[in-house]
Image 1: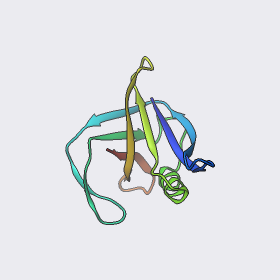
Image 2: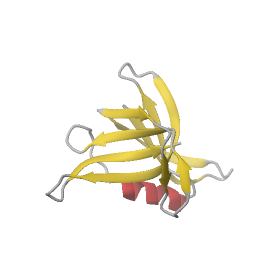
Image 3: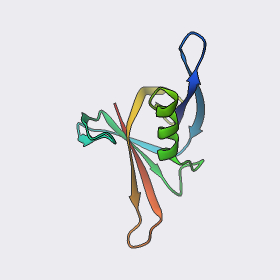
Length: 115
């Protein structure tokens, strides 16, 4: 499970205000991979979160949520939990990649690059 936290703004003390959504049936994989972000900078990812297009619920538009969170002042965050609900880690989402089904144009899975 993962709780996706999207920044919706800041309060009067300049602390971020988060909208949280629980997503079930995800897979976390540790990595040491170098990827380029949307603004063309290279980052070393700590983990990649795989979100299946059919099995993970609810279905969300992660690209739109990441852009909304950035526009509100903070990057999107992911709080990952194991199957018993114990917290594994709190990550910042830097990269959102969509894996298509080939040859169709539907989405197979979404990868969130975490640091």
